[in-house]
Amino acid sequence: MTFNDTSSLPAYLRSRRSGKPRDLAAPGPSLDQLTEMVAIAARTPDHGKLAPWRFVIIPDDKRDALSELITKAYLAEKPDAGRLEIEAMVQFAHQAPSLIVILSAPRIGSHIPLWEQELSAGAAAMNLLHAAHALGFAGGWLTAWPAYNETVRNAFGSADEKIAGFVFLGTPSKDLEERPRPALGDILSIWSGAGS
Image (cartoon, rainbow, N blue to C red; front, side, top):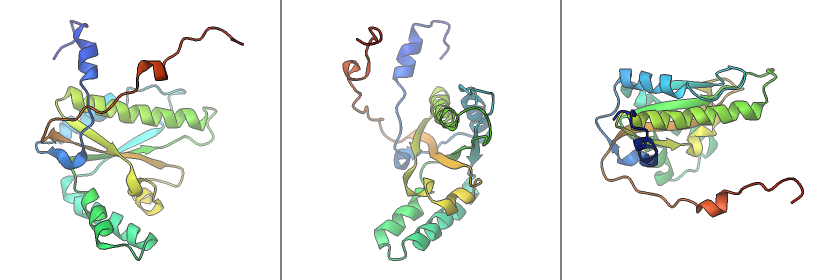
């Protein structure tokens, strides 16, 4: 699809849906396509030109290692975990054909507020989902327990960084669901001036 006819752009943007990672199947993006997606994702608002985010591609042959890392970290924190909990941790890393971990990597000591840097990381993640959609794939952005665990984070980054999310990418194996969207009247207002 080209966007010479800009009337199609709003409809195209409205067509983006998140895919449930467990429902994303092959084919997934190639390494070249993943690299292109990251280049697009990096075209994001970034006050101070700090690039306060990083992307880590998890190759197919490292999914078992990621699964083992997550499972061991979970059991270290919750040694009495039940079978279903453990299976969920094992399965987490194996969803969808492709996986990119996004890190919020703020520049500590910068005059740019931390909050703005974290917002930029979220914008980069959203751009990654738009890039996937533009290339004909679907993506699912998950956090879940692994995103908040220090051991898992340390496998990808430093103490100043946070996992902003795991973005799973592939081809939908079923129609993507439209989720309920808020009524514009609930989220949009027009300011009528101070003190009014």
